[in-house]
Image (cartoon, rainbow, N blue to C red; front, side):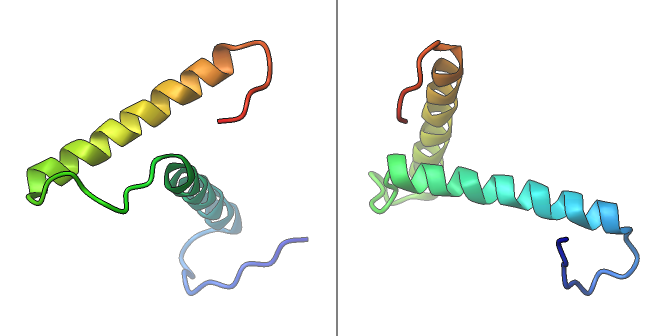
Length: 77
């Protein structure tokens, strides 16, 4: 039994459960990005340079995930 405390009273229980499930997937993505692609330091100092670096990180993460799923053997990320 899972109990959620929320202040969203106009949604059904199943919808709230789905929202938490989707949010957890987002949290796992951020955890994976932090572990494998440290974004502590940005290579540029303007908004465009930071966006490019973040997009490159997301694309690299996607490529690694696709390759990992296509391989037959288990590998660590």
